[in-house]
Length: 142
Image (cartoon, rainbow, N blue to C red; front, top):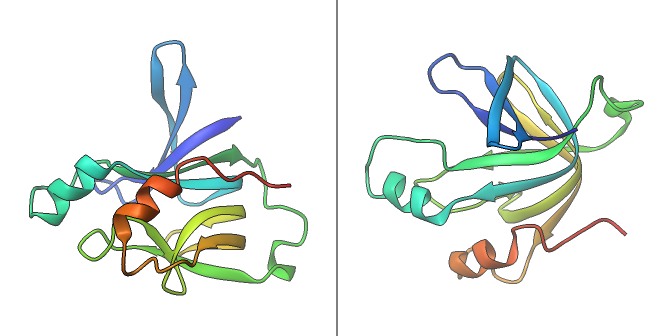
């Protein structure tokens, strides 16, 4: 099942939404979540409001296939820590590069980490608007 996951700032858990005929609806909250074929999304308008000092609202999430349990041998994978800092950049980062997609994504109680990330490495820090245009859903696994 394809879902959206974002950090709920009120309860500190992850909010998991699924798509219905009426749009995205809350399915449940969880302390940790595993996703496959994960793609980060940042709404540029929401990011700008937060960047300019407005109260935080849901404008960034990771979309992917919800896994009922961790993938086989998840700790055998090399997991890379992923961060999203809206006061710095309008994209999720892995080692300073914009994250476009990942084979697996683990959203834990404190850390978000990915396995087999695909990153935009063509000057992500110098042109963040280009990363926002390039990132949403244009890359798929071969």
